[in-house]
Image (cartoon, rainbow, N blue to C red; front, side, top):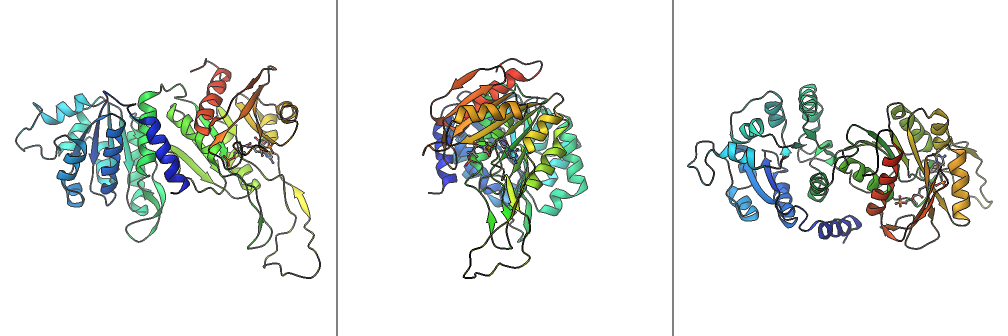
Length: 419
Ligand code: PMT
């Protein structure tokens, strides 16, 4: 079982029953990713939700209504003019019943129809009739996704309050590679559960998170790096998105799926992270800097692979920018949260960094422990505040810790108290 699958199973177990009594309408449109909607329905059912499926005619070419009927345990709505099965006026009844409408996968066509108020089938009519929050998970060929018309339609939908889940990048069914894949069902369902169970205390706030490690090239095949996997930062980003924030995640190389609803900026080196973070900083409300940034990089990067010799090899290193220090100097209204990865005198080193970098609080991380720090699913930290407070926390999952960090951060944000 991969780490991703194990994490998915853990979070499924944690989410069981969380949507009991909630009604979700899923619109499935004509994309090859329609088969993933079967898994989404099944997972939402396991969370206790009552799930109703609306299939477009095109979606039914990919997956039969019978499959969705069996998985959802409900009649599948498709045809406006079919004999009424359960509801008086089916599209109005489903629109009213829904606590949330999720269109997954959403084709360019349904985005265009929804943006323009076209109601010519069961799904588009339901979208026009519902007052429930509507989420679209676009999935399509990269060129279609990037087309100005599709981008404009998504902007219209966002402005009207719909939530657009950014597609993942990767290999597409049309034998190309790029942005346009439907995110994994586990990721989508977790985002839905979070949104339906949590409040949205960070709505209207922009949160910038850094995650993973930076890598500093030595030559075309070697680099200086560290053991960060991104788990801590991805957990903070997912939690911030679940709390309604606009989230930008500046990520070093990591093998984790992008959390739903999060804009991911991928970088490799400290200087690239520096540039990406500064680009986003001015209108950010909260920065959580969990990345392990390389303090040094080689002065010269060899253009060709360095050949072995009998002698040793001396690398001359130079300092990288201290990104968080610079953010502290440029701070206007931003709440700044740092991490300190230490192996000894953890709290005193963390306090020194807190003061030097002008932070609101710092998460002191003793990375000498086997179950905490780099690469683990769990963490054990102490949070030191600029007000002199010290709170020591027991071992917990990184996702739980992300919640605690954001609870602290919310207390520091102007105009807010704890969740
Ligand atoms: O990704 P995981 O596998 O889940 O691991 C999580 C983690 C161990 C990486 C994380 O919990 C953690 O401790 N991150 C901070 C690691 C670190 O580099 O700490 P530091 O003490 O060297 O840096 C202090 C702070 O300054 C950090 O917030 C760091 O992002 C920032 N910094 C450091 C150097 C630099 N050049 N620029 C920076 O902004």
